[in-house]
Each structure stands twice: as C-alpha cells, then as structure tokens.
Image (cartoon, rainbow, N blue to C red; front, side):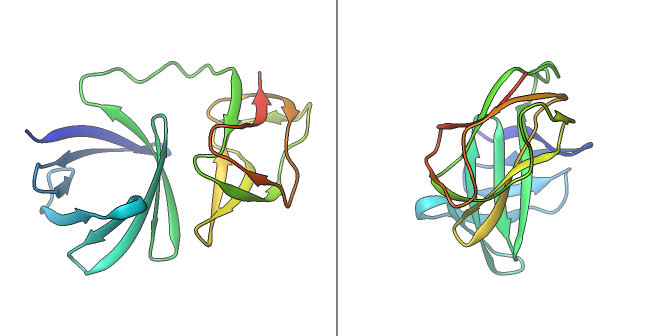
Length: 155
C-alpha cells in the first residue's frame, strides 16, 4: 500500500507518495523510480544519480549532487507537533564536529545552524527546532560524536 507523507523544507510543504515498488512522486508530479541500497544509499533513475539519506526522529537529511537537504516528515493525517521545544539536540549519525556556532546564553531562532558536523564527506548542520536560549554546549570543533549523544541543550 502506498505511503503518503508531508515533507517540510523550511516554510515549503510537499506531499510525497511512496509506492511499494519504490516509485516516488512529489506533489502529484511524474513518478520517479528509486531503489534503496545499503547504509542509506538510494539510486534515483531520472536523471540517474545516487543519494544518501540519514534520519533522526522526524528529521531526514538527503545528500544529493553535493547538496544537503534537511526535511521534516509528517505522516499524512497527523498534525504537526507544537512549535515549542525544550531539550537537547544530537547527531543523527556518527560525525566529526567542524564548527560550533552557538554558546551558552545565545538566543536562537528556529532553523539557525547551531553546530556543523561532517559525516560521509558532507557538512551537516544541526539546526534549532524552535526559538529558544542555548543552555549548554557539550562538544567542540574536532570532537568525534555518536548518534543520539546530546550536543547542545536549548530551553
């Protein structure tokens, strides 16, 4: 049975349908055949290319053609979660901290890049999920971090 999800890319919202055979269609457009491979690899038929994906909770990162896209997944029929957020942010996969862009006491806005990680030879921003104040930073440039380990706390 096809799955329908809503992807948010910043303020833009897209309805994505994924068929059982791996065919993907965005906003009712022409279906594109994809094939999932090992370790997050995805082969896209048109135009032929490779993409890599990583996930943490409702956030997906897609690495394709030298660009990184950060998307929020919302299953169809489920309401978007509340904008308020408290807690810590972590790496979606093992990575190296390239830069820390925030310090305790900084006021941040939803979408601000707080930490820049490098994984799979690509830079991956860890963005604030909501407006708030940085409570603590638990990493520094050069640190090797594991998935799920708190890197920064926001209140």
